[in-house]
Amino acid sequence: MSNLFNQAAGATKEAVGNILGNKDLADKGRGQWAEGKGEQKMHEGQARSEEENPNMHRAGDSVKNTGGAAKEKFGQAIGNERMEAEGRSQRAQAKGNAEHHENLAKDNTRSGF
Image (cartoon, rainbow, N blue to C red; front, top):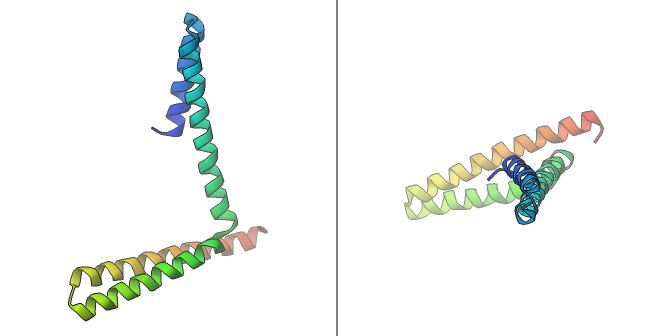
């Protein structure tokens, strides 16, 4: 379930539990709301971290590119077209990620991060 759904469902359960005098339902609702709120905060923190420090991804992009190149060459060497294609795909994905992270770095430099 999404974090917003958990928050809404939890708030509803808590309200209904309070109206009916059902402490157990109210407590479960409070817990579900808190779980959803915690997930939301975690996702916001991850997104902020990526925006503020895209350079942390460069090493991962490089590793993924190198691994893709190795897989592609090995696939060529043994005549495994599927492995070769997977390697090309992995390299293309790493290149796209690297371009995205480079753009984030440029944007952050302009905005003063």
